[in-house]
Length: 380
Ligand SMILES: Cc1cc2nc3c(=O)[nH]c(=O)nc-3n(C[C@H](O)[C@H](O)[C@H](O)COP(=O)(O)OP(=O)(O)OC[C@H]3O[C@@H](n4cnc5c(N)ncnc54)[C@H](O)[C@@H]3O)c2cc1C
Image 1 (cartoon, protein in one colour):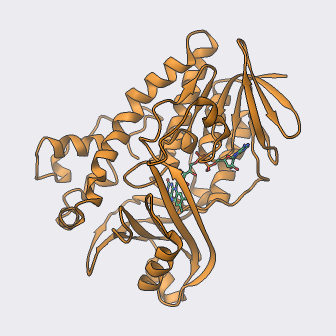
Image 2 (image 1 turned 45 degrees about the vertical axis):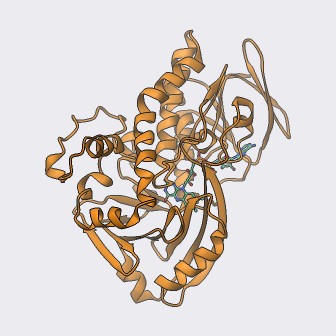
Image 3 (image 1 turned 90 degrees about the vertical axis):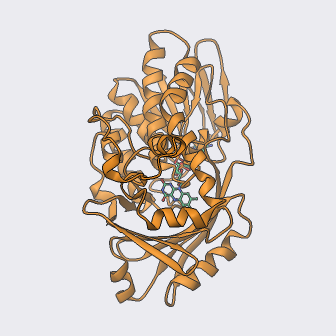
C-alpha cells in the first residue's frame, strides 16, 4: 500500500504530525525504531498552551503543575508565583505514548520496533527502507530526532548550534519532595552558556544541566545536584546532545520534510523542543495537505516556517544574550520585568519591546494578543 505520508519517529513531533495528518483525512504510517512505550531523557517541562496547539488535553500524562519558579544566580534568588500553572511536567514514556494513542485513534497506523535505515525519492513517491521491508508514500516526515537519518537526506546542519545536556531522575527525602511540589528551580549559568534545572515529578525530581557545546555535562550535573539537593539518590542518569534553532537553514527537500529535533526546532534560549516540535508537526501536516492537491511541498513548508516559527525562535536566539550578561539579566528577573511575559507570551513580543528600548516591560504594559484561533501557537 502507498501511504499519503510516512512519519519516521514516534516522539512528540512525529506523533503530533501523524495525528494532524490523520485528522486531515490522510493515510499515515508511523515507523518507530524502539518498542513503545520507550523512555526518553528529558526534563519534561512544557507550557499548558500545548493543549491548545494539540486541540486535546494531556492531563492524564501530567506529573505536576508548576505555579512557582525560583531563579538562582550565585548566592541570590528570586521567586515568581502564578495563580495558573505556567508549566506542566511529564515523564516522556507516558506523554509520548499518549500522543501515539491519539494519533492511532485519529486513524494513523503505528509500527514500533522497526528502524528506518534509508530512503529514496522518486518523481511520484518516496521509498522508505527499514530493516524488515520497504514502504512507499507520497510524502515523508522526518521526526527521528537528533541523529535523524532523514535530516541527512535533507541537508547538513551546523554542529556549533548543539546543546549538550546531562539529566537525572532523582529521589529525595519525602519532606524535600513535598516542598518542591508545584515549584521549578532554575539556576542561571549553573554551567557555561546554560543553566541547571530542578523540575518536580509525582514521586521524584528531574534534575539536569544544559548549555551550548557544554563539556563534561555529567560532572556539572553531579556538582549541581550535590549543591542543591539533600542526599540525592540517583535513579537514572544520562547525557544527550541535540541541535537547536539556527543549526539548520533547510527543512525540506522535494517530498521530504523535517519536524522537531530532526529539523533543529528546539528553542535556543531554553532548550525546550516539545512545543516547537509539535508546532512544526502542525505546519508539516498543513503543508502536506496542500501539496496533495498540487504545488511544491518544499516551498510551502519553508514559507510556513519562516512566517510562523522563525520569528519566535529567532527572537529567542537573540534573547540568549542573557547567558553572556547573567548579572544584569538576573536583576531584570528580580525586578519581575519579564514575569508575565517570559513564560506566557511570545519571545518575539519580548524581543520587540527590548529592542525598542522600552525598559518598563511589565505585564500590564504588554498588550494582550488577540484571542487565538484554535491551535494557533502563541507560547513556546
Ligand atoms: C536532558 C534533556 C532535557 C530536556 N528537557 C526538555 C524540557 O523540559 N522541555 C522541552 O520542551 N524539551 C526538552 N528537551 C528537548 C526535547 O527532549 C526534544 O526537543 C524533543 O524530544 C524533540 O521531540 P522529537 O519528537 O522531535 O524527537 P524525539 O523525542 O527524540 O523522538 C524521536 C523518535 O524517533 C525515533 N527514531 C530515531 N531514529 C529512528 C529511525 N532511524 N527509524 C525509526 N525511528 C527512529 C526515536 O526512537 C524516537 O522515538 C530536553 C532534552 C534533553 C536531552
